[in-house]
Image (cartoon, rainbow over all chains, first blue to last red; front, side, top):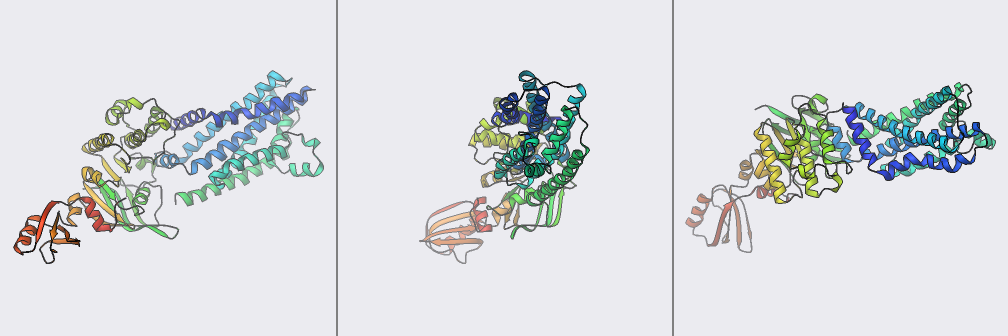
Length: 243
Length: 291
């Protein structure tokens, strides 16, 4: 299976560049230790903070794996070689998604594991399932966003751009500081960010409340918008590099 | 002989620069074709167009009876990655596993060991290989899928003599089995040693093509140098230079020339006759040193 071979090769490469992969995977769990474990007066509070960091962890993979990975790949001679190999771009893209999924699973898993070990988290099975679905669903538009960064940002700028957007959107979306404690104007701004709506879904899940349908709609709209940006960026790059 | 790859009236510009200018080029099945030319002449663009990395502005491209972007066609070609184009953290065996997974009847490990001596570096990460080992790996990657047609971009640049001979032998053996090779090189010695046919590319056009001998004939088969009078008016002189009493003449037939030189009563001493090199032909055709 060619998908598996490409997936395997990219996992091996990532595993052997720990400076990049270990940080991406562990950073959310490490920050969670410092922030999450201090807000544990109630089980509900612990659940909410864990949910926020689970989203934060998945976002990191979307930004770095797709954003920075694609930007770097655009200029690499290896990418040029791989294009001549008899393999469809769809297969290689699927392999990229598999790699990102594997990474996100580990990053989110570490946050959950840390929370289980150090805090009083706990919820029903259906709440866990809904949390997972929120994180997976929210990752779709953010992966599109990462791809758009990857194709639009110049390769040398992709890492700082991804870093800044990653932190700004996480902060703005209320993943570090609950939106309820934001001043009014910030809260209004926060409500247009995709990260806020991923958060809303994840929080509703752990609070065992029904999902706010409007957040799914926002994410659907963002998927279309970022998807279009990603496709436009891809086409533009193809036009410059392989026209 | 059937063509394995062909460019017909292909033009390609980047910005305002014309990389290929209505070029015609054909590689026959079972031959080793060398593309020669100065830097920026269009050799790499020609390869990029043939392998489907670039689209043409006008003209047509044929690769193994099909179109370069067709996956079924690409299963029958191999290509060297550029310098440093190999993932540094992957081991040689992992790279070979990935490359070979794309081809229906790839070479087995033993064949790779035998032809490219990959056994010693099989478990090493590519980033830690010496320049020569990287180059050998890159060439082996082009052959690993056992394709019908292989494109080699500067296959032995920077290699020591021994490594170069090893690759030449591997390339020669592949051709013996009926494989077709299109290579770019700036070692004229390499073209002379390997190529059945040479195409000289200059400013996006094929300015000369033929066997190594044909190309050499463009400047005359022999180079005659001596101190003495200018050879003006002597038979078969393709080109001659006189500098400080030293004459260098490229002639079609050295016997005829020398006989005429003696017969003309001109003054000459320290005469030297040797076969013209492809390099000299190259300078003559393009007006530039090869690079």
